[in-house]
Image (cartoon, rainbow, N blue to C red; front, side):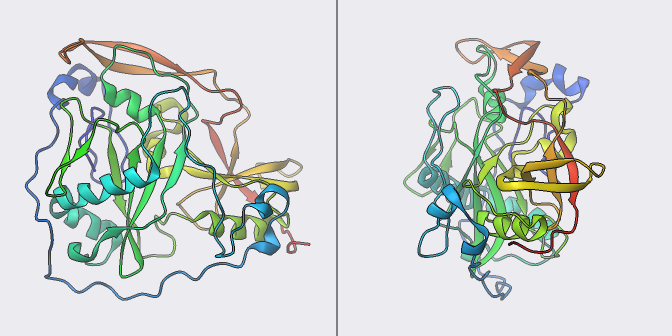
Length: 344
């Protein structure tokens, strides 16, 4: 994944933020400099059929039904800044993702191939035309810290890199990259204070591996499992970013989950029988796994971060806290639904 003030991890896009790394964050300020080939022709892309468009009209009602376009896609809400901080557009996130692949793809290709389980042809990889905005559950990040920390706790875009119509890599692009540029050669130009800007992982070719879901896929799976219809447009939401909120891997923006509202309560077998909910979450790990909001949601999440001067010079490592926005979820529980018997 990309360089990060939280450290680098080659597997699941999670940050590593030990006590030792807290005290040595200044060494991570420089972006990783990699010399990458812009294209490659050594491999033949793995042939696969594109995912068929799901007929989901039977699973929708209310606002969600009104959002269904003639092409079978849901019209999602556009990305909005949680606190007025300027953000990039979905189209710009796609442009930056393509520039990232051109700039660094050759270096990350072996990792993506291991994660995916197949060979990858960089010459055929390009971002899909549809990016998903993952809203953050957090409010404004405190001033005076290295901007990488604000990026980590902020909103992100999910951009899918494809080859021959097949999803190959999921890339999360921070929505706060307003100071990132693409040069005349199509390569990415990062600012001096980069970090926590791009996070990525190869999409598994196995059915039970890491594989992000489209909003249409999520609607179908949740409706079929719950026996209820979806009555609001799905929203992709960032899971908690701190160690205490999500623990390890799931604090990565790659593990954002779709939030779906149902037109009637669904009964849960896990947590224990008798509990019902009209709000379910579904994410990229396990096609039939669902989540619900944990009963205890914090008002703040806390961690440590590196302060910097107005000139970007490293200062002290200090604690910080970030408010959780009202009604937002940062802690989840695994859920299993009772037999639904189909959508009425």
